[in-house]
Length: 367
Image (cartoon, helix red, strand yellow):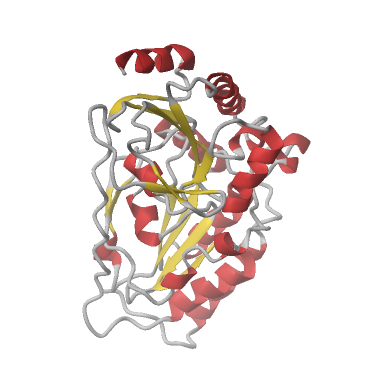
């Protein structure tokens, strides 16, 4: 086990000073810039201006044991977090290639790794939403990242109760959470200092085993035990419709349509197409519809604002804790799940599946 430097040793002071310099440089780096066109900047999600619920995401876990999980990097390496606890602090940065604040912070993140990567395990964790390994590798090359990079399958974010990106998670040698926040700069700087200066634990530090997730729903599976939240706060069962009619679930993000218009125009166009197609089809009384908003940076007010802005005819609800999205293993938005009258999954459509009307017609014919 690696020993800690003396609390006031010159080498530790240099390391901590380096962190402060690196964090303060996050917004002034000369590395590849974020693609901040006027269109993107005007439609960015509420990063930096989060609602109270979003701002508090994960903070209730400060001081709690961190999850003991294995991650697989995009290079095929396995990282066992439990094996790291007790010897080094761990810094996890959750991010996405399409996230403007993530891009803004990446140069500073790289500098932090260069400064303290030998004293702290630093891992870049892509959130696995509308990204794939090829995109992540290209991003790594563009920004010259050298730290390990993993793509979360949803388990790590669920274990940490995370619903935003960027998200920084700092874990001490004692396997306890030191910092969970979307902010970099001084707050992150102080958290990294605290984790590096913390003593080694007197006993074993292995973290906690995360709660097992429910099996992913596939065609033929019965949807049960899942609930979303309507705009007025009432619970909305997600499985079998109350009328026993077939059901179409549209799983989407309220801000992808505008925020990704420049950086990921194909995704933005797919979101718009699905919304417009659903609005044309929703009036048919043979099928029930439910739009379920989820993903990062979403609160109930965002769903209400989306309905007012788009005038969508879809009944809307919020997947506030991510359980619905995880149940359907959502990694691409928009996704459409077609359920029969008993609440069983018939078919799942992704962003590239264009003929929603035909799919709904086939669902109707089964009833």
